[in-house]
Image 1 (cartoon, rainbow, N blue to C red):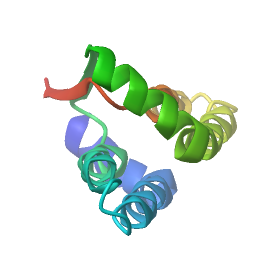
Image 2: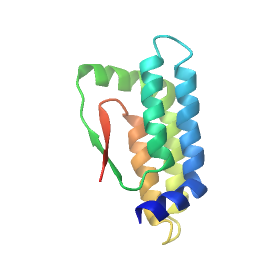
Image 3: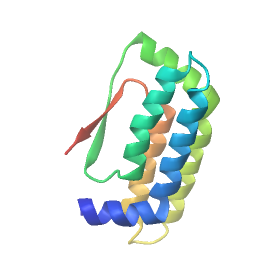
Image 4: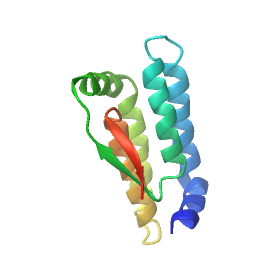
Length: 121
């Protein structure tokens, strides 16, 4: 399901979610202080483009918590809401449930991206 799922995902939602992470990363990189946050956005944009076959492992310390709070206030909430709404729409059909679950995975990541790592399975 990995390769076929990623192709279908890219056509029906992954393109827009990946672009939103990329645009968010570009906006963060405008300031020097925001460059580390922008680089993290670019890493997770690749996950948003092709999420099948990848898992997210959460962790981190105090700096990750501070970055997550700053992220949540500025960019996290709009990205999480858009991913969650896309997931709800995709879960309306039986065929769309696996794609909706990927949206919910990305919505959770949009709420706390720092300290998270992507693992290939």
